[in-house]
Length: 437
Length: 191
Image 1 (cartoon, each protein chain N blue to C red):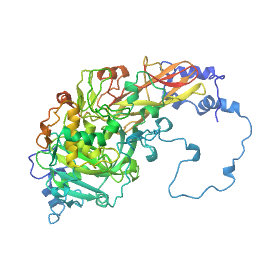
Image 2: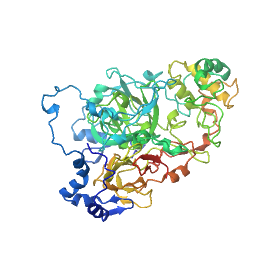
Image 3: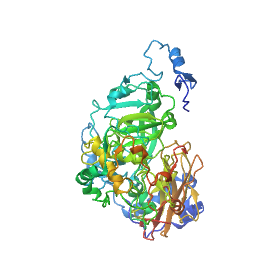
Image 4: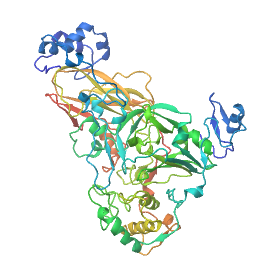
């Protein structure tokens, strides 16, 4: 609706009023200013170009003149929003089903990822599991090995929690690429999603089987073709791990592990084993392929970190972000998401001048632990070049590092656990690009 | 949180008070119920024997726990490897775009090349992974003996064992991987 307003800069008195509340360089404005702005003033500022562009009388659209379609059994997005899809690669011809699709973070708002847009990472495709034939076995160092059906688990007391899930390899392109690739926020950082997960506490089932003296780990495997396995220390398993059966209120999707998945809050996504069929209680980690050959972090001296579990504190601006174009000058909202595997988000700072000056973004009080936090800050863009960055701090005091500081810690081969600050360069023409800064 | 020598498994009741299983059952008047029932669940798990999991539980640990009977040598494994693995991983384990190299490599070249020989810390992982996940189009189709043979051949391609070294449940855990000392365990750093 709104037309390009490049030729019509913000009115001077409004500009002066806005800039009097500038909180950091290059146009970042206090959100308090907007909240205190009179309705007429804000409306005039934001809508002046629209008014100028179309002065004709409003007509009633066709959909107001005839009944719409009937209620449906399972809903779909508007056909006008059909471009909001996961970013999925071409099929893997060598290892069928292996690969990932990413959440389109730059096209989403709020903090909950719709189930159809939750990122996927599979190591041998998505199995089509009949829950009536699926078995979950809990055995190893327990008093009594037990077998559970899907139906059995549905009868257990459940908990519901909102948690982010992030692949350990998320954002890896920006960690190791020689030059910053032209890509979107979802394309770079979209192995990240957040949902309400409902399921049975693993501690309930471990209590029922009776953990034997000397046990210190659990080893879990899935029922997919890769039978993917991961090991989790027993103290974490007893603390907050669940066997998830529902995702945002409906049975978890096949690509998330239907009928059941392990969910290990805050930790690298790969340990939340999908299509869960086995938990063997042990006195040590199994050292599966995906915790030795992969999902370990090579250091510059040839040593490697193993069992790095919590995802580091991190944030990314989702708008404006890579491959977008600002089509008008004036007031914009800079917004994005922040998260940490070590607690809740306490602070997000934003810079519009490549990290020279910073301002606190607005976040709601009492942020959830181990879930996405949405942050926002007004930004007056007047056509100058800018580099937008965000920097998160978590409740444990961890601060998101600059890209260069992160890169210096690891071998160039390492793409796991990258949480460096993202930089989006805005050109004088309003084009937004992924850059290293 | 976990106390290994505790006789009755401890759990928190709804008032947050730590009690033993027996005390919880007494509080809720459930002492006559099934002894495997935990106080906070309906106790629907069906008892199963470890013997029933033979051939189903594929987990192999570095100490050899979970390794089946049987044995194999690299000499025997070459034919299996060339038939089932080489099309993707290459005749000498050199890999190809999109398929990991299995042999050779170094962690200090630019870029580093992480292979079974240059990187993997445990020989058990080869056995565990090949048996559960390889080859991609027919995982779990190799016999236990074939998995020993292929594992031996991959070790041989890396110069870790000789061509006629017999790999079995006793010898495999003793195979010393070149990079085994270079992993830093972060499992207890959970913040």
